Image (cartoon, rainbow, N blue to C red; front, side, top):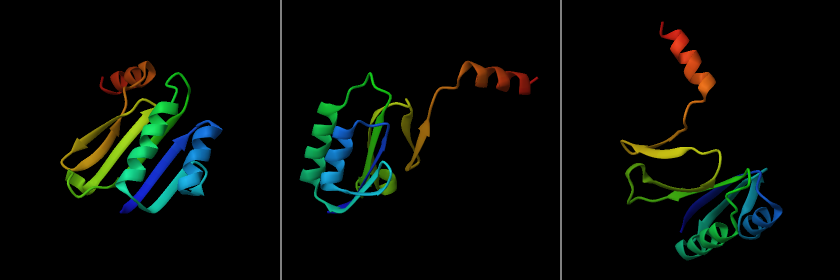
Amino acid sequence: MAMTVAVTRNSPGRIRGLLASVMCEVAPGVYTAPRMSVGVRDRLWAILEDWFHPAGDHSILLTWPDSKLPGGQAVRGLGIPKKELANHHGIYLARRPLSDEELRRMGANNR
């Protein structure tokens, strides 16, 4: 059993209530469980996937230690902001597309 952490953003009460029923909410939208079994975590994730509505402006991230993966950490996510998690030499990095304004500013700085 390993420490599991869930982070939510703009999630509906139903999802927050589910997480609070199996984890401790240590800060608004941040839930922890120090000894969550793999079976409980997988069942929780299946329910979250089932209840998640991608049209909404919310997101859920779940992470836990996993010694079989480079970097020793597993991560699952649902929703926006749309960021891609990339494993770079054993470290998870979050990346997102640049906005048109950010691209314009970068182009202006490169002249």
